[in-house]
Amino acid sequence: MTNNEIHEAILLTGGNAWRLKPDIWTPKPMLQLNKWTLLEYQLRWLIQHKFNHIIIASDKEYEIKPVFNEFVTWSIEKYKVGTGGAVLLASDYLKTNNFYLQNIDDICFYNPVELTLPDTQARILVSKPRIGFGRVELRQDLVLGFKEKPLLDFYVSAGHYYFKKSIVDTYFPDVGNLEDKVLPELARRRILEAYRLRGTWITINTMKDYIQVREILDQENPL
Image 1: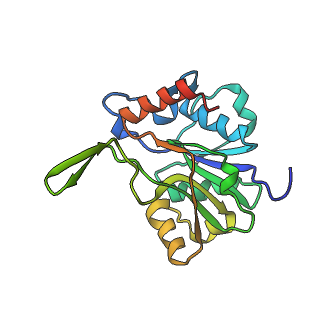
Image 2: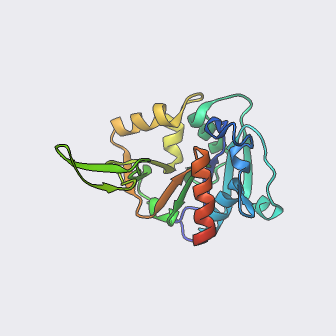
């Protein structure tokens, strides 16, 4: 290990997964992905990329396989504090001054160390989203062709981040969301950098997303 490597991560596991209902009532961290739950998949992914201390920010403890216990610290919120508040609570368990942060339902196929730069205060992983419809290409009223679910020409957050703890101490609220309380303020102050994802990003919001992730893991076995 070197001093410049990042070995700690916070994993956000809150949320009620309302968009998966009524098809699935299982809490999102417990969604089954082959022989792993989604929570175990993300833990395994982080561990395989040399993270050795993972803080799970949640409103409850979930069952995980014993092999993960030595890597995990639980940060349990007693009431709803939002994603920003959850990170602030979890940061009390950090042992170093910088850390990786990710959402439970954002699966990215890349090396997370690419996002971490020792001299950077805050960094966000961004990706071009894929539209859920086929695009019809027109010239006036003449149909020229079709393009199935193309990538859109703008970037969105892929739900993975890198922060120095000083950023959390200064900008993260006791109660409030990372997405609307923290990130816009960091952008306004010009201290948030972006890293463009070159790999695949899938977020599990709907039943269709869940089925797609299981199919990809069955076919590609990216781990």
